[in-house]
Image 1 (cartoon, rainbow, N blue to C red):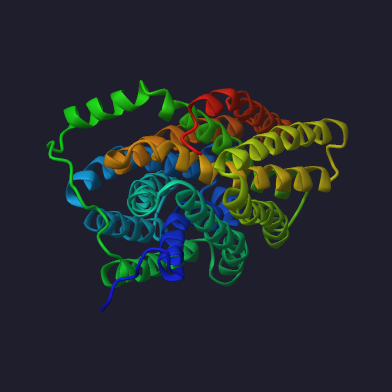
Image 2 (image 1 turned 60 degrees about the horizontal axis):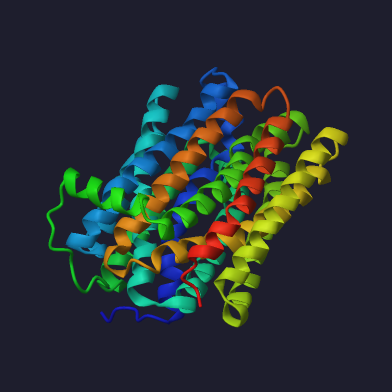
Length: 398
């Protein structure tokens, strides 16, 4: 069977679905978090570790996928990640205790790291400059549509069959994507790195990137941007269902407003990148995040029981993320065509590990007050804005 070709809608959809595995694994089971907490008779903070453990696994997995794919090829390594992801979801579905579920969620993260890291590396293999930014934005749109539907689907599955069905459903998705990768995805790595795959070589390569301002500027922006979004993701189910008293279905609908903002951001960003370049999209996105974050904090302090004061500013923050996150990835990848896998890995490590720490801190305090969530999101928006001068100095975009 013929492989999909670069520049076609088919490869965009496939790569977009592979990147969507990450947010799907968080958003689909969010409506079930309170049920999981009650089922295992756990505290809010303890139940929250099912989310943070996934992010920690996601960060750890990215250490190896990129460097290994730079030497062995993208396709084979991606299939390893998908297989591990499917097995870990199966284990989650039948976890007898919260400790086992947390461990299985950690392994889910390790498995899911592969598709995201390698999809970005494949984009760098196939595209240059603005085309890379546009392709990542298109993939971001798909990555937004899938989790927009995920909480609704997750709530429905819980109502029909309980929270464990969320994980079984994802097993079938992982199998379908694995078949698509085998049959449709071409191998895009043209020149494997000659250096051996070893911890010493991985450390040396990452060290060189961390000393390069062309990478670190975009890594800082990416980490702050995603951490602000994840602060909301990790605490939203408890705030909306606990503080505002929404049902799981009501939470899913309100959460969808935020995801719609993200999708709109990625769609508008594609047009801006095509006409004015990726740097302009980043500038607009960072300002949106900072202003929306401050509005979110202000409403939570002045009108703490007004739901639109939470949902609307967060939708605009997510719109800024749709501008910023894909283009920050493109900016980090562009200067390093020979190490696209390693760059994608290290970018994900910094982004996800920072988000996991932020999510754990929010989870520890969010049951007491929604301000823990809104203040964190506002702070991350300001950090992203503060990174903008460095981005301008090292930008590879013309």
